[in-house]
Amino acid sequence: MTSEPVIRIVLAKLGLDGHDRGIKVVARILRDAGMEVIYLGLRQTTASIIAATEEEDADAIGLSMHNAGHLALAPAMLAALDEADLDIPLIIGGIVPDQDIPILEAAGVAAILGPGAPAEEVVAAVRNAVSRDRQQ
Amino acid sequence: MSVRDLPTADVVERAIGGDRRAIGRTLTLIERGGEIADQITELTHPAAKGSHVVGITGAPGAGKSTLTGQLIRHLPTLGLRPAVLAVDPSSPLTGGAILGDRVRMDDVAGDGGFIRSVATRGHAGGLALSVPGSVRAFDACGFDPVLIETVGVGQVEVDVAGAADTTVVVVNPGWGDAVQANKAGLLEVADVFVINKADRDGANDTRRDLELMLDLSHVSGHEDESGYRPPIIMTTATDGAGIEAMWAAVTDHRAHLQASGRLEHRRVARFRYEVRSRLATRLETSINAATHDLEPDGRSPAAVAGELASRLLA
Image 1 (cartoon, rainbow over the protein chains, first blue to last red):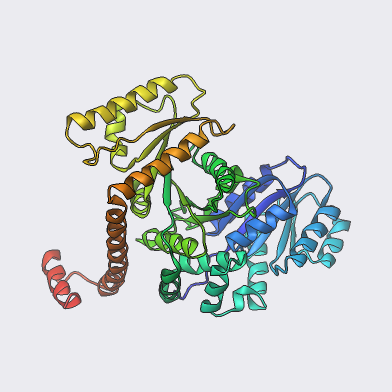
Image 2 (cartoon, rainbow over the protein chains, first blue to last red):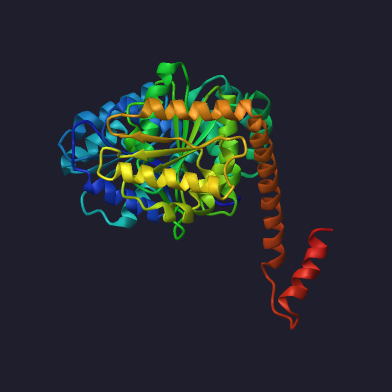
């Protein structure tokens, strides 16, 4: 009763990007940190991710991007969240060149996790993003 | 203002009015349990109209999620508004869970249906409380039928079968013989058998084994006294073959329950079961508190338990 409510996070691949090894590893890392991971898998749309997030009452969304589409896809997801009036953190994982990180952060992405990010960093990024959001 | 910041009564009112996000929030509050969950039970109970509750159970990989995904595509074409409670196990070590059933139910969310993934969570009796609570909430929000999808093992399955009007057991070709079917205790819970992946070799052998098992319950006198015999439906979930027949068998079972007066009987049993689960949860809290710091004092465990029982149950 006194403990923090369990964190529920939606994980998905947005658009045409079949590289799902990384996101499966992340799903396992977050599960082992005690979170409930709602895994949507490949070829999701912003609309399907929003619908799942609403139905699952998720605390955060994690998207994996390995197709160099992050500068288009991440802002599209943020715009969809904004339009749905859903105020929860978006975390991006995958291949994001260093020079793109400030661009995504300025756009409103809560955290960006590169390849090889250790498990502790992944867990901390989600926990921090969710607790910042819960305190607002 | 976010639905998360509203008082519980307002969230539930919006949920009953059909607000998708409020429904999602209501389910979260039910899963967390405690006084707020009790309050939601109070608020949703009067609005619940008695939706048809269908349990879909079977071994991992049998095709439950894919079948359920096909059903929630099919049911709206019949004018129905289905909701799904997809139950997956929590890790006993970390309490976390990967809830992956939506992967096989894509493109259905947002089209009038509603899918919610649920982790079993560790606490004793947790699911036995939250599943009926969530079913009641779906019912109150106008969803009918409510499908509960779960791995068919152990206590979770008993809890879920206890919450359903109709239980569908999903098996596959090559799954085992009639002796194993008897051993697995499926006979007791199955109202409809589905042989999924029926395009594979051995589907007819599996069907024959199941038929034999059902014949044997006639021989041993354990058949349903109202004369109901669970039908066996062949499906191929990946292309939707047999889905209409499967749903027809589920509605036939419901009609049978209604005609024979057993629907009422099952719902009374369900009511008793839920009251019992709630009582057990309360008692367990008291028992945990009373035994948490217990040290051996030379008396036997039976003597200590006897003394505590007279105190706790006074």
